[in-house]
Amino acid sequence: MGMKYGDAFEAKELPQDLKESLPDVYVDDLLMTLKYFIDEEKAHLWIKDHDVCERCEDKPCLTFCPVGVYKLGHDGRIQVAHQSCVECGSCRVGCPYRNIGWELPRGGFGVAYKFG
Ligand code: SF4
Ligand code: SF4
Image (cartoon, rainbow, N blue to C red; front, side, top):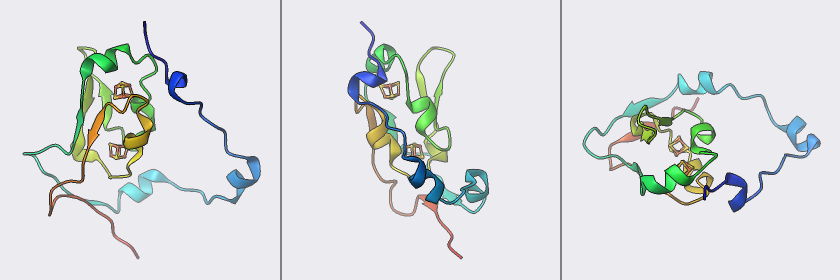
């Protein structure tokens, strides 16, 4: 039997007043300011068990990652483009089956944020 996202928890809508108090954020503009130090030898993100993904009907990882790290491959498996990760941490809580392995990139690698 397949597993649905809602089986694990129910997504909640933000209250209207909270929504209106939030600033407009344009993710593409923010991404332009980032600098990546890519570790081609060691992935800091990985799928723990692809059989679990097969049974995960909604596959929320395909939508919650702000930079689209997770894609469905032609073979039906989830692919992980760890090089694009902005280390937001969403996949640590967004996968309802805790099926994504996540650790910080090794020292000297990962994304650098520029402020100001
Ligand atoms: S990584 Fe998590 S959210 Fe994505 S398909 Fe697999 S089990 Fe589902
Ligand atoms: S930490 Fe954020 S940016 Fe990186 S893969 Fe997870 S959801 Fe995507």
